Image 1 (cartoon, helix red, strand yellow):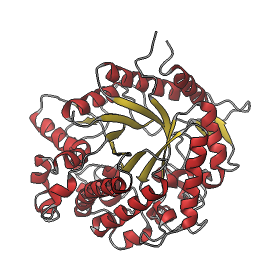
Image 2 (tube, helix red, strand yellow):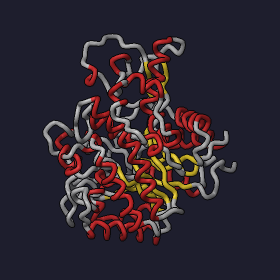
Image 3 (cartoon, one colour):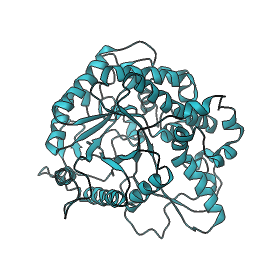
Length: 462
C-alpha cells in the first residue's frame, strides 16, 4: 500500500545545543542559565551538568555521518546563544560562528537539510542577571542575535524557528522553578509569557530583514486536555484556561496581536500592567509555519485535596484547581518519564490546530519521542521495541491527520541521540542513538533502524 506522506516530506530528527554540545568553556563560549542552574545543588538529578554532554561540539562530523547512514532528510538543531554572543550583548565570538558554519556546511554536504532553532533555553547568564525574559530589553538582545545569525547562515539555512517551547521558558523557568533560571514567581512567568511572544515577532522580523525569502516559524509544546467528567461545568472552564495558557497564548499573539480573553481576565492587572501601548501591532507577524512538540495528552480532574501553596501544586498556574494526575481508569502504557502514551492525541491535535487557525500555512511536528530504560546488552544490541511502537503509533496518527487534509510537512523524532535531559540529567534516554556518556561511544538502537526503514518507505511499512 502506498503512503499518505508526500515524497518530499521532511523526515528529520532533533536536538538542542545545551543537551548535546558540551564544550561549555571552549572557544570563548559564555555561560548560559543552564550552566548556572545545573551547577546549583539540588536542581538536576545526580548533580549532572551539560559540561560534556555528548561532546557534539567536537564530534559533530561523526554524528552527521550517523544521520546520513540513517537517511535523515533534515536535522533540527539549536544555536547556543552564548557561543555567538557570550554575554548576550554586541560582542561577537567568531569561533562560535565558525562552528555553526562548519556544522551547516557538513550537513548540506551529507544531503541533510539544516533547520535552525535560535532559542532552546540557553539564555546568556548575563542577560538573566539583568532580569532575563522578565526584562523587556531581552527582546532587543534576541532580535540583534537573530539578525546576526541570519546574516551568517541565511544563505544556506532556509527554515528557521525563533523560540522552542516558550511556555516552558516562562512557566517552568519562572513559576515552577524546575528549569533554569529556577525562579518561583507567577508574576515573572506572566511577564515572560508576554516578552517571549514579542520576541518571536521581533526575531522573525530581524531574520526577514536580512533574508526575506527564508521561512520562519515558532515551535510550541501542545497537548489535548482530557477531562475526567466532560460535562462538569467547573472542569470545562478549567480546561479552557489550561488550553489558553498552554496552547493558545503564543499562536493567538502572532495571528491577532491579542491574548485569550479568559486569561486576560484571570491574570488581571498582572498582565494589564505589562502590555504597553503599541504591543498589539508588535505581536502580530506573518509566521510561515507552526512547529508542534507533542509527547502526551494531559488528564484533568477536580482536585481531591488542596493544601499546598499555588506554585508548589503542579506545573500549571491553575493547578490548585485541578487534579492533573493520570486517572486510575487509564489502561494504556507509560514512558519511563511516567508519561501516558496517547498517540491518537497527536493527530487530533494537528486537526484541531488546522481547524482553529487555518491561516497558518503549514505545520511541522518538530518534536515527538519517548524515554525508555534502554540497556546496552553484551552483544551491543539495544532492543528498544517500546520506542519503536511509540514512534510508529504516533507517525500513524500524523498520517491520519494528513489524510484528513492537515498540511503537515515534516516530522522530527526526538532525539537523534541520548543527551542531557534537563532536570533529569542523564537518567532518561530519548535517543535513537545510544550514547555511553563515559566513553562517548555511539550505538544505533533498533528504533534508529526502524526509523531508517520508515524514511526509505516515506511512511510506515505496510
